[in-house]
Image (tube, rainbow, N blue to C red; front, side, top):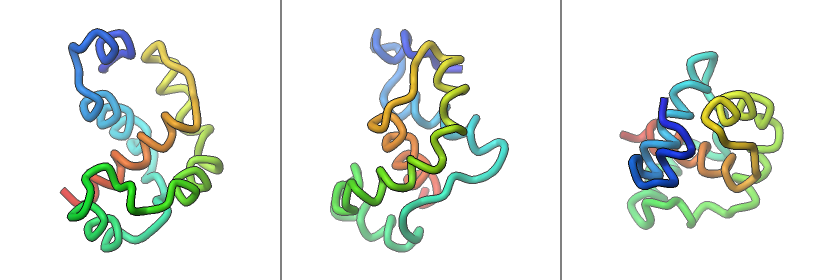
Length: 98
């Protein structure tokens, strides 16, 4: 498990931290994305941060899935935030196209 301290100290990258979270969260079922995998793949070609997909879409999809994110974040010494939830969903999206 990659902890928040490891991430903040530079011992793990942003991608490693959020990928570890996604893998744990999705061990009990896939997270829902705000758009199709095809759209994610097209957006990724233009921007690996997926910022061409409007933030409000990501925010909306974090909202109804946030309960699944709280415990894994807490176990790593972190707490839930909308921004962190967006990072989790974006990493889940990137994993689906890899």
